Length: 213
Image (cartoon, rainbow, N blue to C red):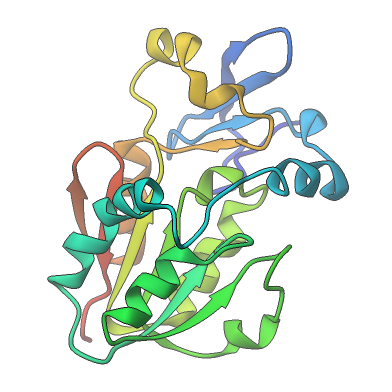
């Protein structure tokens, strides 16, 4: 039986199917997720990530990341301590934040798998174009809540689900490593559940702040 990998609710329904996979949607948090039987093995998943070409010298990629970097910088205190979660093989955002005067740790299950960094608390956590890859988004969400200091910021980038008709034509779903698809409602659900302040910046940047108390 399929159940939601984010909120664990068992009230899920078919959302879309194509030649590659079937997708379900949770009736509560509205996460859209791939049939668990269609998930790639870790080796096959990493083989696709190894093809990515994101480098610190790539000005186009840095401009892309600036959609999160710029609004986040206006909200952070000076010399903050951050974690780039799901940094990939080239932690470009972490370098941008370091160059801006912050101290950064990095975590990635494939490229920076030091779990010790998950035992620390941070002033902010970033996750850019990674949350859609998570097989168990509930685990990452609980980790983030534990690691984020009171008053801390969570900055995410991911493309958002709008409706079924758009989803059926959406190129974003065609990447075999994209398995968890969030909507505005999904983030509103998470923010309300955890007591976080929520801001949407543009079409694919989500900022959340943990209360001070």
